[in-house]
Amino acid sequence: MQDGSSRGVIRIMSKDISVLQKARAAYQPKLPVALRGGDIKIELGQATEPKYDRDEIKRLFPNTYGQPEVKIVAGEGSLNAEPLKIGVVLSGGQAPGGHNVIAGLFDALKAANPANTLYGFLKGPGGVIRAKYKEITAEIIDEYRNTGGFDMIMSGRDKIETLEDLQACEKNFADMGLAGLVIIGGDDSNTNAAMLAEYLRAKGSSTVIVGVPKTIDGDMKNDQIEASFGFDTACKVYSELIGNIERDATSAVKYWHFIRLMGRAASHVTLECALQTHPNISLISEEVQAKGTTLHEIVEYIVDVIVKRAENGRNYGVLLVPEGLPEFISDIKTMIDELSNILGKDEDFIRQLNDHSERLQYLSGELTDASARVYGSLPYAIQEVLLKRDSHGNVPLSQVETERLLIDLVHDRIKYLKKHEDKDFVKFSPLAHFFGYEGRCAAPSNYDADYTYSLGYAAAQVARAGMTGYTVNIQNTTKPADEWIAGATPVTLMLNMETRKGKRVPVIKKALVDIDGAPFAEFAKNREKWALTDAYTFPGPIQYFGPTEVCDAPTKTLALEKGV
Image 1 (tube, rainbow, N blue to C red):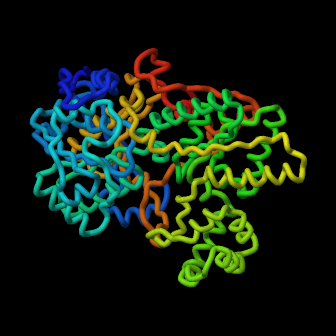
Image 2: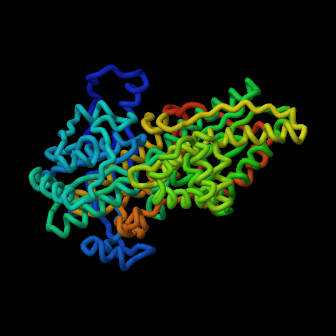
Image 3: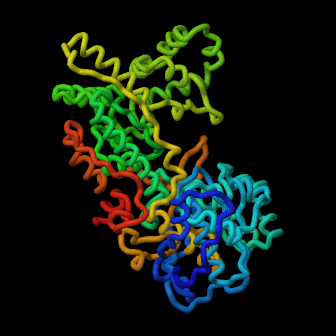
């Protein structure tokens, strides 16, 4: 047990658990040295400003703009030792380690003062707005230590953004006597946390708001935040599955596996899994966008690899693709923009046309020639999907199953080559997979278990210090925990202005794959070899017990970024 923790012996669980879960319940996550003792203080840095849109952000956040960065260090400080009531909420999609954030927060509060109380708001921000919560006790915490999922208090995708929502929160916090709220979420959730912090400070409320960075997509990171929690575990889960598929491919020697992975806005998951497993083809959305690659060029690249492998008697392989790829393909993006404009003015007329051939003929006359060719090349089912619009009035590109789209287009191209270019030796038997929910609620790896527990512990200190509008961070995590550094960053430092639904709004800038960075360079250096040979690696399942280099290793992405 770490010094300063209120945790004692593990209590008997109230429900059946697996042997592994029982063993994991006894695991005590590692903490930075500064968080282990009883004396903790906050060290303030220089005032901060965002890189972009400073005037707009300062106007929107006059009460929380320019706050200093924070470092949490060992030593006698002036943190609040009086009994406090703190709330916590899980926001957005699940990510491994959420329960450990809450456990770290709970243990830190109880270590500071056993009379401190932690409340969990139920089913996400909607529970905060509607004052639906429960007290989190030691008995509850001990059932969920080092477990996956968000089921302790559940999550939701509501946002605290309207004036009515903000007013409801202010009233609920006052009624509860809440000293602080910790919001565990991604970039949007932490942006909403900053807006709530600004509103409460403007109203003179004493409730502080602290954020914790979460998303398996890996796109909430920057100079202050090394990694979003859950990314490590999710990528390890997906890489195990990909490795299993690769082993199957070399055993059956007759299937091409097209695997779609999570990541609408960024390709971090695909890149990390590629580095872990060495598949034959990995498509990185950011590279596709940077090069202006067309859908036709992508298909030609895939077919070229398939043909070259077939020439060597390898009619099998593995391809990875991020789910958001279509939004990065230049000619698809142009076609979608044109299609959106056409639907905006002619949707009712198009719906009245009797059959798909009539709709296709009409759209071919309205789209530019280039976009008409792209739309016409798509499978019928996807053409129909793109004629719908979501609740925001946008073409629902997210409903396109990218792996099946590529399979259909590659299959058509190979049929053409067999007929016209004497490529009968190419055997193409594709199988489609989507790995998504399998990784979101997995039991956290040691890295994520330690990282999230430390984030929760740090969040408690920031809340005790009465600091609001901050997102906590743990840095130096490629080193042993003794060298980890705990701190917090003003959310306004991470904001920029973006246009969403026609309005300029503040958001935390998503981190895309840096195609000039070390992780992508490592991938690019090896992909030609991986394409034509069976250079597959098989990570296997997550290991929780054993040598440090096996059990505690960070992602390859983070290690390469830090030069480890």
